[in-house]
Length: 133
Image (cartoon, rainbow, N blue to C red):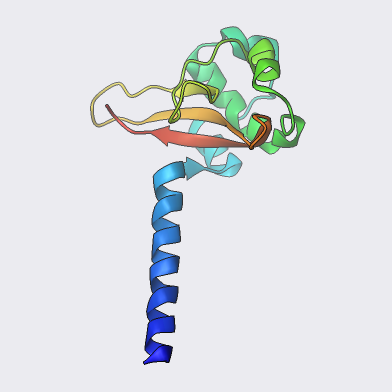
């Protein structure tokens, strides 16, 4: 019986952990997938700030490949370099920048999200699919 209980607990832990991660992060995209979807252009923060979504999309893979540059920076630093966030990721406090907006209710909206650590410094940068409203 103990063995069965341990196995059941392990299964529930793994399933719950996978669900929680899927819930919090949703669908994400690698730099390689972003390049295949939108193309590749070198990342340029001043251009990104005022760029159309198609141009931002082209810079997304380069930004993700060099995300180490952003790690440890404050949200203020991100906003200074990239402008005001125009995306949404669970909270207005987390900077997110749109790179593709759904044209129909069946379309996809994608954004670059700067995830915080416990001190509100950037701990990771992801490309995230925003679900339709």
